[in-house]
Length: 497
Length: 106
Image (cartoon, rainbow over all chains, first blue to last red; front, side):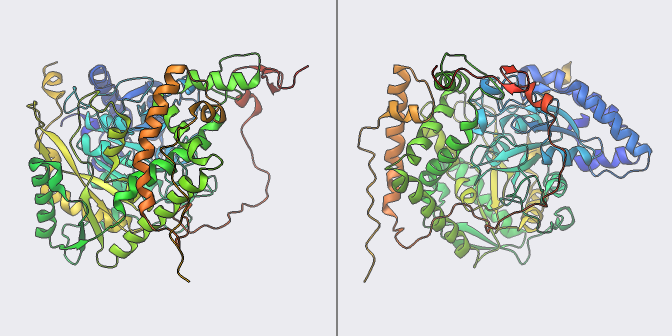
C-alpha cells in the first residue's frame, strides 16, 4: 500500500529516525487516510488530530536532538478502554461517554515515549464485553474487508483501524480472545502476552484475573516491536511482573526447525466446514514444511473453557463495574435517595450485554451459589491450566484456529450464547494465562458472498514464551504471506478519489 | 477413604429471582428486562451445568495463574492526582467534596 500508515512500523520508524521523512508528515498522511475512510469504517470513537500533531512535533524535535526512538512517528490506535490524559476515554459506554482521562495508561505512555503517534481512540464492545464490536454503545465499526460484516471484538476498532490503514499499530486488550478474534477477522496480527507481562494501569478493568493488553499490527515483526516497548513490570500495577523481558524482536526466525508444535485433538476443524477445515489443514502442513514436528496433544478439559469463563469473567466484571455509581465520575441520573441514584444511573449507563454479565456475575457470587458456581469454575480453571502444562511437556507451541468462522454479518448472532461461542478457541489459553496470537492463515468466501474473508491461525506457548512464539509466527508469516493476498474492500473506491 | 465427588448441586432449573439479583447489583430493570435477562440467565446456566461433570473434589481453586505474592512499594510520599482535576469529573460537587443525594433520612 502506498499510504504511509499502511507501511510497516519498522520501516516508518527507520525513515523518521534517518530524517528521510518527518513524524509530522507521516501523521498528516495518517490523518488524511482517517478522513478518507473513517466514514465507512468507523474504527475510532475519537480522532486525536491535535494530540497527534503535537506528539509528532515532539518526536521530530527528539530526533533532531539525536534521540533514538524505536517507534518514531508510527501511527497508533488506542482501544478506548485505555486512558490517555486529556482525551475522552469511554470504554464505548454511555456511562463514560464524556469522561476525560486525568492520567495515561502505562502501556500507552510507553509507546508514546518510544515515539508512537496517537491517532485515535478505537471502538470496542462496551467495556470489552463482546466478540463483534456490536455491543459498542457509541458507534458502529465495519470490517474493512467487507463493510457488511463485523470487525470482531472486543478490540474491533483497533483491528479495523490497522486493517484500513488508519493506524500502523494498535493496542487492544484481551480477556477471552478480544485481541485474537478481531485480528483474525480483519487480516492483521493480534498478540495477547502472558498474563502479568504488560501493565494494566490505566486499562478500564473488566475481568482482572484475565485482562491483558497487547498489540495488533500488520506483521509479526511490528507486533514484536510494540511488545518489546510495553512489556515489563510497573509499580502502578501490582499484578504486573517485574521479571526481565527478553526482547522478541531479536528472536524473529525464518524456519521452525527443532520446534515441536502440538495440534489439539479436541479442536477438530472438520466441524467448521470444508473450506475452513482446508485452510487450517494447510496451515498445519505449512508449519511442518518449515521444519516443525507436528505432534497430537490433548486438552481434555478445554471443552469446559466456555462454562468456566462465563462464570469467572462475569463475576469479576460485576465486582469491577460496581465502581460506576454516578458519584465520582461519569453519568449520573439523579434521584432523591442515593441507592435509587445508583440503580437508575447504572440502568441508564450500561447496555444490555454489560447488564447481562453483571447479573450473571452477581448471581454466581451471591450467597448460596458462590461455591456451586464461582468456586467450581475456579477449580475447573485449575484443570484447564494443568491440561496445557501436560501438553507443553510434549510440544513447544500449540497451533489452533483463532475463531471458528470468518467475520459474520451484522446481527447474525442475536442470541447471547451463540456470540459467547465465538471465543471457544481462545478462552482456554486466557484461563491458563498463556501468551497466544493470531496470524493470517488464509481466506474463505462465506456463503452468499463474493468477498474472500481472512482466517487466523492461533499459536500459543507456555507462560513467558513470547520470543519463541513471535519468532515462530514470523517464520510462518514470512513463508506464507497470506495477509497480502487480498486488499480491504475500501481501496477500490479510495484509489479513485 | 476415597473422597466422594464434590456434591454441591448446580441449581439452574431453580427459578432465578432476577429482581433480587438486580437489587444486589444496583441495577434498576424494567419488567421487560427482568423477563428477558431471566430467560437468558437461565439459558446460560444450563450450559454452565456441564461443569458438574468434572471431578474437582481434590482440585485447588485458581484465582489467578501467575505465582501470587505480596507486592509492597516503598512508603514514600509521591505526587498523586490533583484534587481539582479529580473533582472536575464529578457529576456534582460542593466545594472540595463529591455531592450525593441524601444517604441518612432526616
